[in-house]
Image (spheres, rainbow, N blue to C red):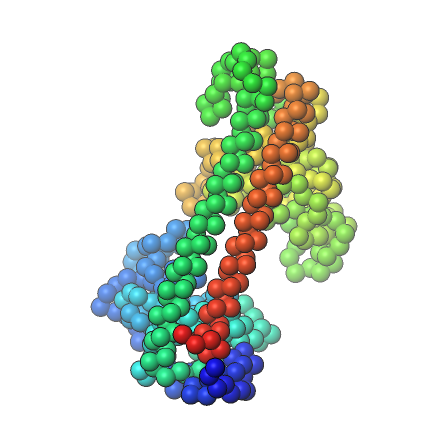
Length: 423
């Protein structure tokens, strides 16, 4: 058991007796130069570190005539403090290039093991420390280099830095493999759930029987006695709006206000944000009734078609189309499962730019829908409810396991980079 001493710094706690504590500015210095012989625009990301912007999807590219020599220099081995560093730690660059002037770049000036400090700067305790330097002072803005430079950080002997880095590389690789396998398993369960719903609402659950062409390319054949119509003929649709921002009298009341982030492919019992009566009255659209199916119209391929079904009355914002089915044609929950089944097909009808497509209430209204007999709709809903409950239980367990493994990884990194466990 190694001897320990109190660091006197809350986020670090005890460290081995042979370790130093030094201000970061004695190990690192800020890079303020502009331009680079390699004109590659780099972007810091929490997942990949500092990488060429061209490798990232959904990032607004700079204009072709932009003078990259006016951007900040980044050399291989530099660290970058990004605009969102307080969420994910400092990012490390394996590339030569430049980055936006909004970022701050620093590099080691003393012999260190870069990988050890990569782990330290991504540890949850370090991120929390940096976060504490910004909240209430520069909330929502960049962490300033001077805040980091004046902070004390642990400095193990160089040989031990290297041992810790090698150990964490090996351990984290194994943990990451488990995490990736678990995420892949969750995606498989989600795909299975989608397949179960699609099969049930488009083919039924009564086994073999006469079929006919639905006339809908992505649905194909349906049972012969089923009908096809358009949503506009069997439902009413609506949308909403957003109250004036910054007006506290409009928000934090008792009225549910649904936004796209509330649509999670399941029943909605309450919204994340709420409005006062004054706020609700200030926006377009009627109160949407319980049983209304909600569909996201904006946000690109990652959001368009996200849906939910109201288990409460609510107003919505303008990014959502509500569909209240006429229960003489379609029951609420069959309508919900049908909308879930066509999730990926909304993008066929999306308009706008490639990076910013959207659908409209008119597109929703013109979408075809299937009409089984009401009695059979109820059978299909009961079947989907049971199957989805079982699959959702499995997904929830996998997600909980994911959280536990992620927390274990964070704890492991913290204990080794602060010397509480020896590599």
